[in-house]
Length: 126
Picture 1 (cartoon, one colour):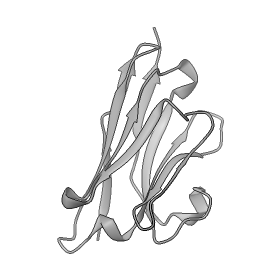
Picture 2 (cartoon, helix red, strand yellow):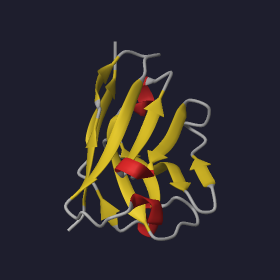
Picture 3 (tube, one colour):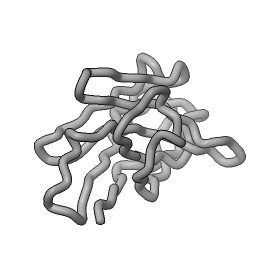
């Protein structure tokens, strides 16, 4: 069974940067290139939010307004890994960040994704 594993979270000061990774494991035949990749986050007391999604074919990328211009989603299909580069981090970016995959995506919403990692904590604080 394919698993998604996020890494790269941690504590960072406001204005700082982090890069999250989403690696896949569990099935040698899995090909990330066949799936939409999404990054989501959930802050305490708030609903899970889709912040960046990317479909390689055709090339479509979605960003939530809250992260547009600061975050960049990318993927390396050769090593089945997705990334989220986060710059100019703010205190309201503090959340657990999840990666997920889907066969198809319209809106970068969580209900469209059926495979999820366990998440990695990002805390932005001075």
